[in-house]
Length: 472
Image 1 (tube, helix red, strand yellow):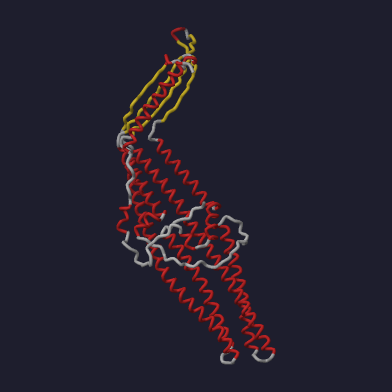
Image 2 (cartoon, rainbow, N blue to C red):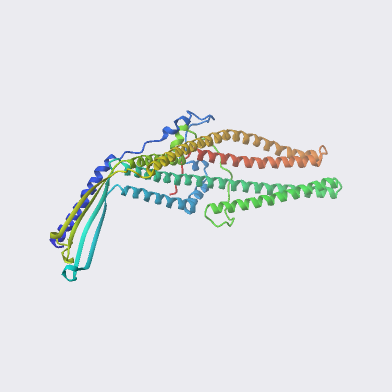
């Protein structure tokens, strides 16, 4: 590169470096966004109204179910769920917006090469034709000095929005994990109910065959035979109803996993046992555990920062404009430092009359801030409600399962004794069939209550913002 070319680009570079250095120094006035938890301090109780047997929290709540299949299914839905992928791309878009807002605090640099030729006629010289050429190569820069931190607050607002989008993504991951866990346990219940219906139908068919033989020998009446036939047919109908329910549950769950709904999902095993007590912690912990609450807090921080930026729209603005380069009538001289040119301008502007626009912007910003505070408080209250509700249900469902277990055991024993009493002629067939129905009904209830306890435990984990087992 020729010496004069080096000198020209050196001067152009110095112009940009000067403004960039000034902007970096100006960045020192940026302040962090204030914490907004003061807005809800009156809503936070010291302890939960529903007591718990332990005060520990679980970091990996999925592991508490001790079900390796469930963990694999959660990993699968993380990889295949389209909603989660859309949320991930949305986070990237918001992050790009924050980078755009940051760029406004720095000078803009641009290079411009212009070349032109002009023809004119001069009347005083008998309209003689004159042709002129002009060529220029310049590096231009513009920069608004952020004296009042208006742009800094705008950037802080965009950063808070980016953080909120990240937390929204985490909330969606947590919600999807909860949906997978609930769907998986619903399939286990549907499978158990179908198996019980099969066993019930087989039992009634066996009893019907026995009574058919006894009827042929004249030991029972036709009325008794018809009752057992009707009960056997009803149990087979129930079996088909649970078959349909299992099929629909499987297909719905396969769609959640991103699979084709073929109803080919293999289900083996029984419900996991809830051996650990409910993890609770303190109400104040919820603010730092639930991603949806933290997302709302970040949105509140964003509107507060944006409000500060809008307040500064009333203040004067200082902008610098600088240009440096070369200009000549000959294109070949553009790289010659002897034809260098430069300029620098300062601009001070302040609003005087905007037709009420600035005041309207302040009113809008204030309204958005108050609305976000209300939304933040509402999110926190709903979170407390979810924890209190699931905690109360945790205790009640545990007692419920205990009593239903006793009822199922006693009804099974009563059903076995009823046949012995019937064979001895001490009770009629109606009493036998009633005891059988009660025995199978309580077994169905026991299956359902086990699933209800698992569903409620999942709701409690989600309400507490539990941990999340990330895919490897």
